Structures are given as C-alpha cells and as structure tokens.
Length: 246
Image (tube, rainbow, N blue to C red; front, side, top):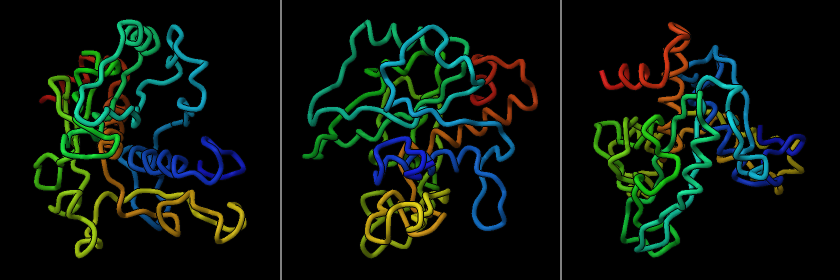
C-alpha cells in the first residue's frame, strides 16, 4: 500500500499513508521491528473505495468480508450541520448488508474552527445505521478528544492519544508525546521517485508514532471484532455489539 507501483490514491499523496496506518492498527503483522496490530493473523485486503465510487453501491457490495473498517468521512461545513438524503442512506444500507461495519465517528466536533471542518453530528451520517459500530476517539485517560464528532449513534470509543495532551496541545513543546504507533509508507526513494518527491509517508521510515483521529480509533475496534470472529465465526452484528457493550 502507498507505493507508486500500486497506488490506491494519486501518486505522492498523503491519502496513501492513511490507509497503511489504519491497516497497521487493525492487522499489522509481527515483524520484530515495530508495533503489531490488534489481530495480526487476520486475512485482509484493501479497498480503494474513495477512488472507485462508481462501483458502489450495489447489493452486498461488502460480501467478501466479515468485518469492514471505514476510517473515512466527509467534513461538515463550519458552523452548520451536515445532512444526507434518504437515497444516500438507502444506498449505504443496500451496500453493507450481511457484513459488520465499523465506522469512524469523524473529526468535526470543534465548532470554533474557521476551516472547512465545522460542527457535525454522527446522527447526520448515512453510515451510522444501528447495525453499524460507530467509534469515537479518546485520550489515554478516557477523556474524549476535542475533535471527536459527537452523536447518539456512537457505540464505542478507543484511546488514540498515548499522552494525556489533547490533540491541539500535542505539538510544539509537546511534539514528542506519543499518539498511536502504527505502520507507515516507507518513503523509499527507489520506489517513490527520489528523496524530494516521496511525500506519501507521514514519517521517514516504516513506523509512525503520531497517528491520531477517529481513523485510528475505528481499526482498534475492527481488530477486536476480527478476534471475536476467530473465536466464534457465527457471531452476527448484534452479538458483536453485545460483547463490546459488556
């Protein structure tokens, strides 16, 4: 993932490293060099959904997978609530039936931002059906991260900030504070076009210690669900939710 030899996004694009980092949290294999994922022996495959939306939705679009991680979303507009049409909600339902969906809540909690990211609510998302597991982000001490989108549809949360500095305070003097350790695009000049043309990775190397956001929280839950299904493949979405709640 993330190589220009097989790009999930346009070459030299941060979107490539995002998928690699998310996958590393859920299913990163043991290699003796860096952190491992929640369910390192899982069978998994990437899906460049955002690059191929013309292929979606369709009936049982995700029927190839037992559990699907959705660490993606669309930003709200500053100061307004985002809503989706009934058709969008229906399309999502058709596409996701018979697979357990884990969904990142989003990073649009802060209504004071002046950028395109504004106040939002998970209730407005077509992805937050009651069958789906919507995941928020916390700090290590369990307090909600200031960016994590709120909403009644949130089902679980996971700690993505290894320190107890909130995201807004985890740079500058606190820039060395750990967030989530995961895999990263290598930034190998031999693959990515040279030392000044390989911006795909978050860091220089194969490990990123600063990943964050509800995109990091969701795969922690996805990996946990994969472990549940290894123990009992007959579990359905309701069983999984019940175990998580317990």
